[in-house]
Length: 483
Ligand SMILES: Cc1cc2nc3c(=O)[nH]c(=O)nc-3n(C[C@H](O)[C@H](O)[C@H](O)COP(=O)(O)OP(=O)(O)OC[C@H]3O[C@@H](n4cnc5c(N)ncnc54)[C@H](O)[C@@H]3O)c2cc1C
Image 1 (cartoon, protein in one colour):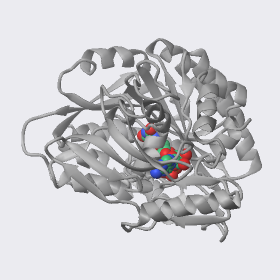
Image 2 (spheres, helix red, strand yellow):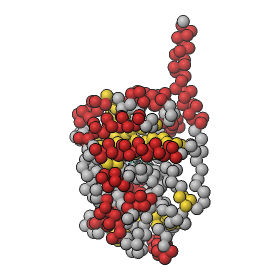
Image 3 (tube, rainbow, N blue to C red):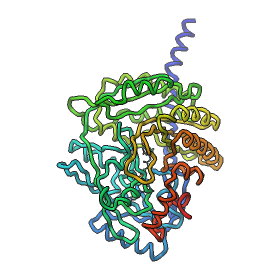
Image 4 (cartoon, rainbow, N blue to C red):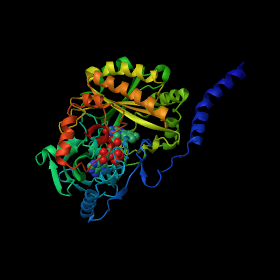
């Protein structure tokens, strides 16, 4: 009997280790680059033949050469698309048979310390920007939850993150320089070419090429983490009591339990508070291989999801005494969780709903996702303040954002299931007074898109006003904008 008990304990202890070892062992990079003459994005579901991918040269003559490339495209009648890190997922960075301007080599930056303004070229990734700012005691004011994205791509979707009490990134832009379809360069700010400013930010590369931008930056600070693991029904009250309105809270996100038989029953709220003391040096978040195995081990495995949730709720709280620098928290790439298998891919969804719609939206998520038997890997929840700056705004009031990551098969059936489920979730978000985010799969019907973004018709009219020959085109424009 004792031996049986010991064996049981041993098996219980060994199972997590074996699960993680097995996951790590299977975790090889099976991805293959698209064949020459074609291009794809982070979804790996959009392979498209293009005429040319033209990398902007990292030299002082880049703008002249870029203008010449646009002239050539106009003469040849080639549509032009603009690409940063290509983490958008709906073919937003290319057009069939078109010319792709790859902004990635365009990465110079300079900090004006007296004004706390970073002037940065649009191809720079946050992983370039953060170490540069860190060395100068500064940090990015608003960005995504990972550092793998380009500045230009981030501005063009008007990204947001888990920086608390902040609107999207547009709120941190002082000005930008834009190359228009005729090759001319204009400066856009709130008081100069103001309409274009509001269209380019969150404009999905349809109004011209952002060359560089003046971004307001903030101090790099030292944070302490406070976590609350609570039943779903208590989560909003806990957030109100322990986080919202607290003077020193700087970054906040919540995560919903994704274990299928306890779907959304529990929530972890993680809040980072500013504290006095030396700011820790910029270093990695630690144990990337273990964290990756823990994450990838939850794909297609209820046990793996259960194990991950236990680790997040029982081990992570043990870290609450630890101090972090703001830059450390922002400086993590997507490598720690990205899907590297050939047969499947991970797709993101995001929905913004006002506080009044949260309960109804979560109820709908709870019905829709299991009904489609979808493999849900993650739900993070954030708060984003009203956007005062952009035309195609998703945050027309303070919004609660639900970011979801799913695995799907790279097959027609996988696509069809995901499309149907996405449309269901979009409908639920609209019914809850909100809308879906636009950089991801373009599964929304045209009707849903226009109900979610009633200003879009005018947005596309203005696109054709500023770019009458429709030089700048991409998958997003093709799906929703073209007449
Ligand atoms: C794993 C993952 C996590 C994410 N997390 C978040 C998040 O926390 N918050 C959030 O808001 N979003 C998030 N996103 C979405 C992400 O912000 C967008 O996909 C963003 O566009 C990525 O930047 P990029 O450099 O890859 O842009 P790209 O995909 O290269 O481009 C996106 C759009 O910007 C345009 N563009 C790019 N550069 C320029 C330029 N210089 N001038 C004009 N137009 C340009 C392109 O034409 C395209 O329409 C996430 C995406 C992924 C895959």
